[in-house]
Image (spheres, rainbow, N blue to C red):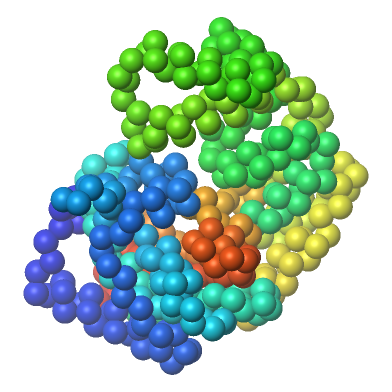
Length: 389
């Protein structure tokens, strides 16, 4: 599909038929349809989705000066509506509509696409909620006509528990948890925390980190003034200052024990068929003297549930480094993958995001989990496999 797709009558009819099949499954499970505005306040995405979505969001300013964006995702608007509506929990919402994302590394990919999805908000039984959403995702993909797919799973909660169990300085824990799924960046961060300043830039940061916070802020502000009107990208000046001060504090802090770093690296390198991958983590944790029984047992329970959905365990991959590309995820995550004419393609995904509703104004942490289906990818995979509507 071209970067700026045109939907002809035949394609529209096929996508509508597929969407109706998906929405009918949602409705049959008690999910009420929600439609959010295509134009959204930019800050709710830029502050809560993370760098990956920040750099791919189309931003604009309306005539009154409000900072808006074309919605890059439909989960956040649905959750925001639920918070502002005052409706009771648990709530079950679903949707189908266009989302918009810049594709800097793949300019041939479409900048707009249809996304269907469902959000299960406020169900306190987290295990039951995860099974419900997994079942729902698999059922809607099958209802849309796609039977051939594999599953990839991960758990940010497992990594979070690991970091808390290891001897990691408190000021680094949140940052390691927040970025562990960003391959390349995370490895560089871990190396920097372990080895300390390796070049002039890092030594400068270490010096700034040795100052009192107020002094460090003044120094960073002065450096930015010296640079002048350099492009800030999607970040504000204040965000850049805060980021540099955080990096300076890291550079000046005590080094991370290489043995601890090696355990983290070894865990994140584990990937493969889910049962074996979990067994490998158990073995590694036993040799390291770290207890991760709760998150590992929870993942094994999920595997039993996945098997009950009729998915061959051999088609389920667990990756310890897997966290998806939205920073609001907090726990179990999953994706369904199939193949279209170009190769492997992600057709659906989802996960747990227990902190998002509180960040949107709910006033308390509310358990939440959802799924999203890329309906045009589902159609492409069906066609590649000879499954036309």
